[in-house]
Every structure is written in structure tokens, then in C-alpha cells.
Length: 301
Image (cartoon, rainbow, N blue to C red; front, top):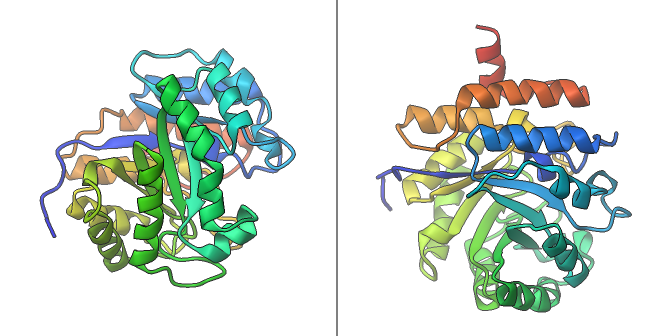
């Protein structure tokens, strides 16, 4: 295990998609567009902007094509879209997404309850999607839910994560997210999982997507940094609840992660003050309290 931190980290801002998707009241298209534009201005080089899942399943993501059409695109910014199938991929391609996101789980029970199929079947479904994306020169990112624990199965072992990672690599994915969907993971678990997956692929293709349900997200990010992980996901103002733990927070707040990284002397290319302001803007726009501790502290100064 290494204790040398990376000099630079890529931040993937997931607020506009993962953060907003569970909101009950529809967030207007223009608010989503404004949010994405502000985030790109703040320095983010990768923004999860849309989801081409059927609006029947995720009503909040209806109009993703319009969002992608209306945003003011900045050069060198990757605008990602979640694509569940070939139809979703074609919509993402038409909307000029720079990266598609496919998904499975490290827990068989979670896959059955949330994707209505086995892990193996879920990955089989993505074969034509990835093949087509590769043909079109589109970057493919895979997200592996419940990599540190499952609300139905309980503990998830590193070898279970390794098995899914291997299948995603065989598929041809360019980047793989290790996601702690219910925020149950601890620092030691994080190190064990990355240690196991680094045996089969280089650290630079893996990211950390940590939820803060148990207040462990920043600790887990620190542990991942010690292992050499250079990509992290976060959500401005901590947008996004955890649907599996009532009343719990979901995504770790971007402001809190930036404060940690900048304090460690790690470059992110993102303006923390601008993000604090964006966090307050979106919290007020959707009528929700700002979940970022750093954001609230800096706003109160």
C-alpha cells in the first residue's frame, strides 16, 4: 500500500444527474441547464449531465435531450449521460454526449431488485451498447453499485467486486466507478477493494464514488487517495438522498471533497468559492437545505 497522494485529481460532478434524479418535484430544464453551465465555469472537466433512462422509471430525467441541447458547452469538458440500453445510447449520441455510463452491481441481490436480472445478464445487455460506442469513438464508463455493501445482501467481499470489474474490462470499458451506494463502507474495506482490483488493472482507470450515509465518505476518499486513486465523484451541496436508508444523506458534497483535496495540496482545477455559491443556488432553486458542511461554513463567514 502506498501513502503518496496523487498530485492531481479528476473530479466528476454528478449533481445534475445522480444528485437530482430522486427529487420528487420536477426541476425545470432551465435550472438544470443553469446548474451545468455554472459547474463548467467553475472548472469541472467532467459533468454527469443527463440520463436516457425511460422517464416512466425516472421522471426527473425527462427532457435530458433538451438539457444537452441547451447547455453552453465548454471545450475539453466531458458531458456524460447514463444509458441503460441501445435505445438510450442512440438518444445520448444524438444529444452529443461525450461519455456514456453503463451500470451493474457487485451484489447479486441488488442487481435482481434494481435491474430485475442477474449481474451476468445485466452485463450481457450492455454488449451491443459498448460495441456501438466503441465504433462511434465514445468513451465508456461503468459504474459498479454496492461495491462495499448491499442493503439486501449485507457485506460484499472484494473478490465479488473483482469479478464484476473483470467483466467490465472484458466488455471494453475505459473507466470503472467503485460505488459505495449505501455509504456503509469503511476505510479498511476501501483499501482492501482497491488492493484487489489493482491486481487486474491499473489504478488510473478506477474512481471512487462514496456516499456519506454513515459519515464515512471523506475518510473513505482519504483511504482511496492513499491507495493512489485519482478520480472521485461528488455532488454539489450534497444533492441526492440515499433511497435505501431513510432520511440519510447520499452523495458526498463536492465542497467538502474540494476542501479536503485542496488542504492536502492536491490540484483539482476547480474553484471552491464558485462551487460554494453554486451549492447555495441549487439548494434554493429546489427548496432543499444545503447538505455541504464546508459550503455552509464558508457562507456563514
